[in-house]
Length: 487
View 1: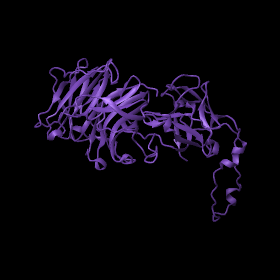
View 2 (view 1 turned 45 degrees about the vertical axis):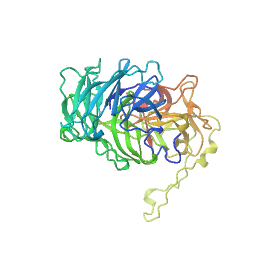
View 3 (view 1 turned 60 degrees about the vertical axis):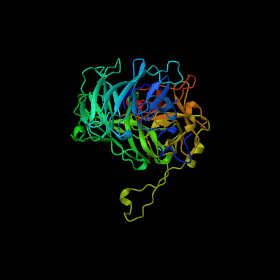
View 4 (view 1 turned 90 degrees about the horizontal axis):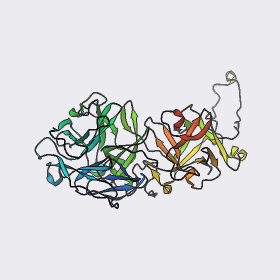
């Protein structure tokens, strides 16, 4: 719902789902119409329709416990200074059979219901609809304009127009004399965000509240002015029903709606939403968090990283991460091409096998390097989720091992990387893998030996063309970026 700027560091139901298919978070992520994620004292919060919401210690596993009075539907929350402003629709949306909605705001010093400072102020009405006009005052999304400091709210449903109003960021009240402006139709649960000179209006299109039959999806238009017009990628105005697709159903989750954007770090963003139905969780409405990519100036949902066996390729040069072991040549009968019979049967050459070379590898720690990818066992990495180790926004931590072995990639105390003979579950052997806004990935150890807490800044880094190391994250250099190729 809102633009939330969080700079952060950092058991699945095995019988029902796996990292390959599950797109929702773990724990008890059951929610409908979630607000954009908010961070408070190291925890993440999101509020939904009804009075409650979810809390997470790490951004991966969620449980109930967030508290929001007032009931109603589709809240949003934003941190302004040292306070949190919560906005929600009290009625409307057909609730109780009508469209006479009310949108209210209230403040709190903290989102932690166990804090002595936890106390909401009295709610203030900022918009309303009478049930007869072409608008339904529900589903608010809030944005603080980073250029002007002005606070904007979009709201509305399919029952008429999506409207824009301005609030006072000091009081949470409607700016005196402000007149609502129509900015879109044919959507609901809208959100406003800003990026690189453009304002984006994201709306939820399709049908909701029908479980596995819901057709919700999220579309977007953009404008140079917060007041519109919001135009999509083919020139259609959202006031005429336009909108470019951001995310639709897939991977056994249906009905994504209620977009929210969270900036994790420079070049690292996620989007939150709910899925109307997660097929792997009995068709329940659940929280979803996905990487947020930007392609040609447009937001699009990325995919959470999935288990598998890959070449880990440096974006800097295109070379592959590999064990620093001797290259073992493969035997091949060599004949001049002009002496070959074109009618001779073709016999494929099998890849080099692990058992053909592993006996030549050292038994203890082995260093790593970067080199030409040749489909060899010392270049093939199996990446497996370790959900019991926790996670971060969009994924659990992973172990990275050489295919067919338990030899694991690990961070070292002197900010280097190596492989150890066996994976032990130590934090320096756990890896955070996040897709970046340009589609590449960053790879971060959960911890650095000798340093306290979760690692918040060091990533796998390519020094020159052949040397991997750990260095501070820098989105502006390809040295920090990697790709995963499934050859």
